[in-house]
Length: 392
Image (cartoon, rainbow, N blue to C red):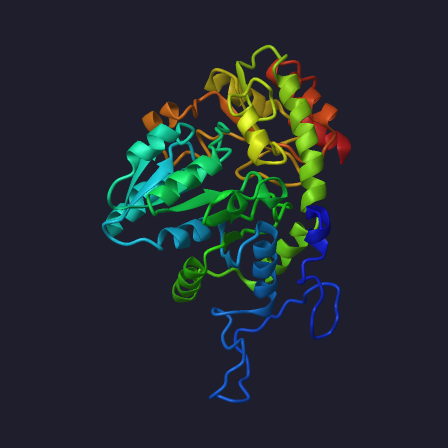
């Protein structure tokens, strides 16, 4: 089956007990055992819940893994994955990545004796040179957040195999709709399912998928021991969002491509970051390892003053943390997603004071581009407040 069909027909779409067309919310913390010597599959909801199980099986099927795990947030998924490692272990990590991941790697894991080296993973030579005798994993974001650098997943996986380390990939921006890292040799895939997978700004969730049964066993133990589970209500909401993933991704990606081209022509935009642009340095590589370029792009206005003017005047995108929703979201990485990074670290990664990140939603692309152009060029005819009042 093609991906769009598999979203709706993956073996987890019908309740096996009642035949309901939507897996119900099993709102139970514990389960009766008819035989204590032979307990049933479910005993306590931290260890397993039928609603969460359906989501975990679904994401494993969509990513091509042997097991999936649903966690309380994207950071809960990332943190659980990092606890596969122990004191004395070392990780090689993409230097352009989400600020929350950077915070865990620099402020939490060192206290546990786990160290990380940040490198430009678009350069495979640098990746290999960073590997040490105690390196246990390569952690990759591709396309990266927020400057959309593209890492060669096949090449990284090959290096990892040569050095007997595992490859971990944050696939939040692409989702399995466009990119399947396990098929390219990765061992573990991570999602902030809060974003495109759920897709409606109404749930916080994280997902892990692996094709390695030993890793799956260890993750299962960590999830149960730490209690980093996704609640039943959020599991159900995440499954509901998944059903429309392809329709949303296709529409938003088409709009993102049009907006990226349009932004290049707007006075005041110094640079546009989007892998769908032919001039993007990772364009060809992205096309070779993914079936789409996604709905996230970034653009640099050159200064924080210009950014603040745009954020105060733009009408359609909401100005907020997060991405991947039906409504377009305009974020200021320097003050939002990457605020956890020291200024010098942030700027070195290209996250300047003039950079804005746009997650394109389901609004008409022409309306969005017109709104952005008016805001960037300072041609706003009325304030945001006046505009909102006019449509109520």
